[in-house]
Length: 294
Length: 252
Image (cartoon, rainbow over all chains, first blue to last red; front, top):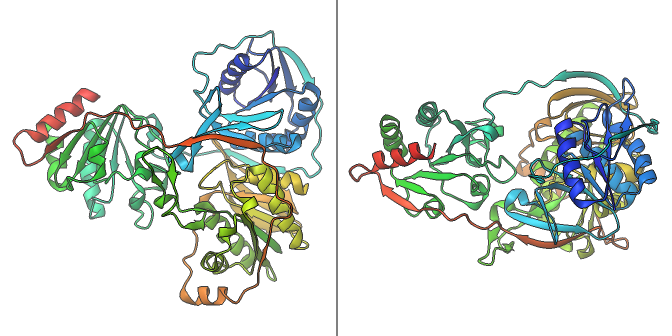
């Protein structure tokens, strides 16, 4: 079987090409520019014309697909590549399995309802199109002679015209990369009390996140710091849940943390059945004492 | 401008329970408009308000249970003029390919249209593929991740936020545009809007043959609970906070 790998960034190209090697005999990489050395048998190189957006290469990619006839297509899960994957799936008469976390014998595993469940799916037809999350092929090594072939641009019928492009300004801490995360929940009665959580963050070098009630409705914290279903899914070394009851909708975002700590005044809160260390007490009492003890 | 907005009715994820065998229990979860589709509806309504003489038609396809008067009014109370819905159990749990086929049939009913607005991703699948598959089926261009839509003559200028760049593009109409939640804050319909919604045109059709599934779900289970130490202290006991702090230090 042949695998087609489609990626816009070189680290994803490497990783997906390595994974493709475990699934197929022959690996063809679609690259938009120079490909990393030695990762595929063949590289189909597409040059995106000036003034075009990269995802308008979808028709060109479909032409590569028709020529190569792969059984499996692995795509990097970026916004642009999701358009390429979707157009290709439509062209092949199938649907993309998106954001695959890993492959098992029965099929591809991905999150359902933002992580409430994990779903394993497999395509019914002859062709499978997947977008695959980073880390799905841990330990796999890419190989190949990288025989480069330049592909002729197939102009789309209704091109999208690029007018302007500028780097995105990202604000705040990247909670996904933080070793320690402090999360604030409904247990904070007033916005000013969040300073108690901020003081703990300063002490621990932690990022501050929250459960849904603090970003929806009250707007005390930015929506990009919301942890849980359809928000952030974190796996820090340590997670300190402050005033969070422990509903499943929040816990799916933090249950992969190394060590889970909880502070809550309600001793029967579900979080105390899902944490490593819990302390029953009022946030206004416990947080200052904890900061002092650290 | 003739604007179509597509939305999905899903079980309310706040009320989904996990059963003891790790399967999902939807019995307490009522159908609701998928969260990010509310932003798409608002974006469509605001686009209509910006262009005189515009009309907004909402389309949705799902199982028979989506044909619910409260749900229909909830959509129509948000600046939507008309609703066309395909409600049939053949339309339950569709993948993006099948959904696009079902929606394309509804879009065809709306006559000449200029743009189909889609949400960022559905609460259940969040595949971000229906916009693309629908555009492919309709033979029109697609732009995703839109945060701002400005109408021009025969085109839209769209600002879109990608992983590391912000792009401004011009897309010729007709087109499909999918929007991020940042595009517009959904309105909260008032009693007057909800009453007026009941009088708006709503058409419910069955499945036109039903779309074939491309994907098979082999399993769908809540993740296994990590085993935790469950050492619970009481803050009022002597040394409890210090013990908690020591455990926290040890975990860093």
